[in-house]
Length: 142
Image (cartoon, rainbow, N blue to C red; front, side, top):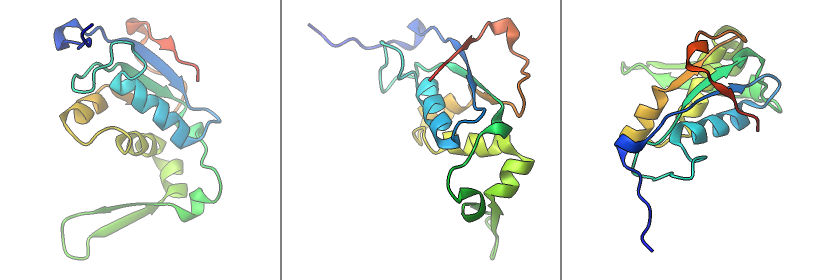
């Protein structure tokens, strides 16, 4: 019996809604990363982009456990000398919770063309409202 390999033209992408309210940020990010890659599908093939569209709602209500709000920092470099910028997660979650969720998911998808393409199918919203009702997304419980 030969191994099944999915072909890109055979992929049917589904739409899922993940509610991040009162759930740890990292736990939500792992579920979202798996959905974006398509690892929940029986036709998953590692070298083919067979992922789904994911809508994350209530990103502002995601929680960080322990002392991560005070001790964890998001750091990036501008490219200039002395250009290291850092933002405390307390500030990031208060001002831009969507970016915190996107950064967590970005760290969990592969750093290649499939991972970058998967991140284009991620939509993160601060509150419970989103504008994708026409796609008839289904709620994903975990």
